[in-house]
Length: 315
Image (cartoon, rainbow, N blue to C red):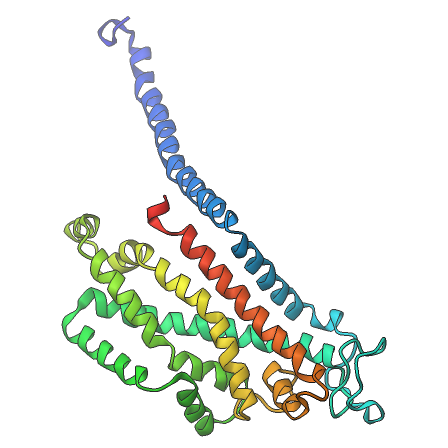
């Protein structure tokens, strides 16, 4: 029976039926993008899991984070507890990795050192990414004066080696964890800004960006909704790689005596305390050195795996 021959009551039901069908169709259309996103991330994970070194790096990073989180439960002793009757004691059943010149347990200090490494490494890189992403996005999108100003400022920071610049800032504002974090972020944002700027310069000329502008989208909406999601992958990979670099830089500053205070259990401080015993009591510097190396390798392996997994050419 056609609509022309249907009864008035049947015709009254049609709008509701069509509205229900449209709602069902809209729900299906809304579900399709979500399913597509899930599938894309599943493909990313499969490509990441195919890289054995990336899985090793993930295990190392997870081990670092768990050690930092549960240090009070894992460490056999208080890292600040001094026992002058057992100074410079070789590894034994009581102290698996020996004691230092003040009788403090080496293993406990290395375990608590993971907390400093995690805080400095991750927080400094996050702050670096925030500064670099904001300045790089503005420079790449607006260009002209903003681009010139940001890139010339970046050149100034490129002229300072990371450690030299960090030492200058720490000398001015004082030692501590947060001064180290701030100094690493200040002298690390320039690379992020330049990297993101190059991505934004290519993405801003895409058709979907022009379409968004034509539909009346503002600059902030275009940057946040259309440009950044398609420009951030190289920056995030760079950030993952450089968490290990920040850990090494922090340990280096403490080793040089300008990082965190000497009494704080931190890997650079332990290396500085053990440098005078190389070839005599090697256990005093071996364990913190291994901790720095494994942490750095872990983040490098994770970054390498993310680079391969997020490579558009492999999709």
